[in-house]
Image (cartoon, rainbow, N blue to C red; front, side, top):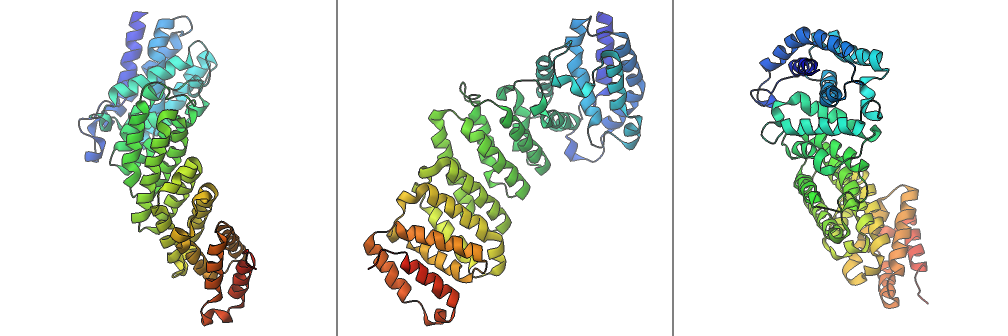
Length: 415
């Protein structure tokens, strides 16, 4: 039995890509790829013979010690990369491995983690993840490009697996990728983080403080300008923040909300600004009344809506996300509305109402203005009424805007 185990391990190790001498991104050609492909031709047939001649059901020790390694090999053979050349793909190694396993156990290799059988899927998963983390350290993970893809493939289907996830053991590689400067790695890392977070139980961070490690990794990427990275990060936060322990949740929400307002305030790329607005809307819905204390929000909203009144192209891109964000703020922070400090919001809404051509949008703006006016005192409504009465003569020719102003005036509690 020991001899069989040694032979299987030898074959698996020779079929896997060995650790590169230099990080994969530092040069185009790595000799280790060709060495591995040559060894595949030599050792893979032998591995198939061993699988056919050993019965994992009867030899639990070999099963426990090798099944996870076989699974890693199977996944690596499926990955896309310069190591799997056209010639390697033509050999269709994954299918051959799958067939050998299915013929023996009536079970596809790709289904191993879906259910328990003569093995425990949780044990196989845990050993896979442990093996990947032992090799892919901070200093060496770029020397295992195949295993980066293996990790990504495994996590991509994690919601289907018959396993329970522990963030401390399963997320370190994902966070290594998130913290890397290579954009493709960041994206893979964030996508893995999201998939893992979606599978975690609500109380997953009730003990320890590993959430701080995740939080700091996310926070460092708040300033990342790549739009795809920004989108991926903003998908992670709404899944991560609700799972935080109650005693730290408010402070973290405060910090994230402040961070996204900083991004909105300095962002010049309209398309990234749109993404930031949509995320800010989600943050307002999560943090609710606590968002009211950030006064810079009103400046950001005012300036963004004002930009929409001077340029049609800007309006087409920015208005809807900015307006929806304002609606979310009003729904959650209406009780802090104050005409003295917030009158510029009413003023810019009137400007937007004038330039808007879509009837449905006009009605939404008009309704919001009526709502905001209703939150004012009677004395303040008198002031607003008088200001509306003194509209520029140039507007009098626009029957639509004058009708809207009339409706606004009629909504007030003025005798």
